[in-house]
Structure formats: C-alpha cells, structure tokens
Image (cartoon, rainbow, N blue to C red; front, top):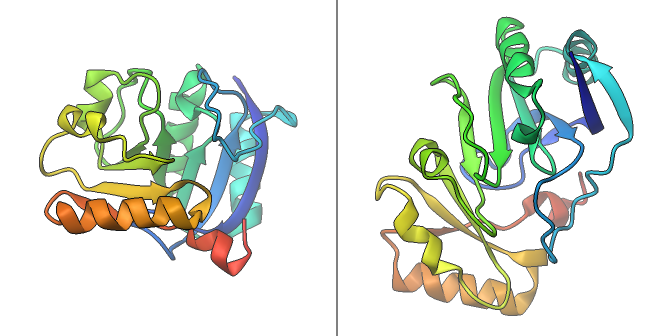
Length: 192
C-alpha cells in the first residue's frame, strides 16, 4: 500500500491540547474540501509505502513518541488505517487532525482532533478528543451542538489576525465552560 504525501518533518505541536509537545508531522496530500482560508500546502510531493513512511518518521524524530497525521485530510486515503497500525506497532502515539467528514473507525488510543468546515460526520463528532473551530470573521458556533459537552472546543483565530483573535477571546470569555483559545504558537516562534 502506498500513500500520497506532502511532507514529513519533526517539530512541536503548535495548537490545541498538546501545544508545545514535540511531534513528527506526516502531512498527507490531498483534501476532500476546498476551504478559502486554508494556509496549508498539502499538494502531492511524493509517494511512499507504509514501511518507508515509518522509517522516515524514525529518521526525522528518532524516539519521539508522538506522530501527527495531518493534511489536507489524512483520512481521505485508503491506506491511512494501515499506516496508523504500523505507527502504533512501532511504538508511536498517533494523533490525527481531520475535518471530520469521513467516518473511519479508529483505535481508542488514537487522538482525534476534528476541525469542521463544510460538513461533519456525526460518528467523527462523537469520537473527537478535541475540536478546533477556525474563527475567520465570526465564531462558527453552529458546530458546537454537534459535539459532546465534555469535548474541549478550541477557538483558533485564522492567521492569528488581531480581529479574529479579539472575536475568539470575547467568545471564550462569554462561554468559559465551553471554549478555549488556541493560537498557532508555531507561527509566533517561526517553526513549521
């Protein structure tokens, strides 16, 4: 089985619950959505087998336990579940950043971040460990009811733009039991 990839690199998680944690990022190519505000280059750069990807993860991050599958939409590729299994067998803790549109059964120890955009599969909303709502001129509060009340919801200002930051901060202050602020800290410190 092969995967279409954009890049593999070692950095720190810059968003959400795990902010500041070292991680190897495996950015899979392609996405099933076309969001205007997307700031990610998920274009196809290379194709690799699952074993090659696991070897690259080892080469980039050594013993770093956290591997983040992102995109685009990492669950859009048929080989992603096999990659998850191979990474777990290699002793990695797998995290997935998904738009939540594709229902994929995931092992219970896989961390799932869902960032809904155009649509959302109910099973993925129920499975999410955390939610990332992109604040771009408005807080997309309509998604909140889709998630269990115990799921943390992060408001992430698009592009860290001051107007979006202000909207997110005000919403978090209005509903402190439901919202948290998540800034793209990797952009502040100048890392990928």
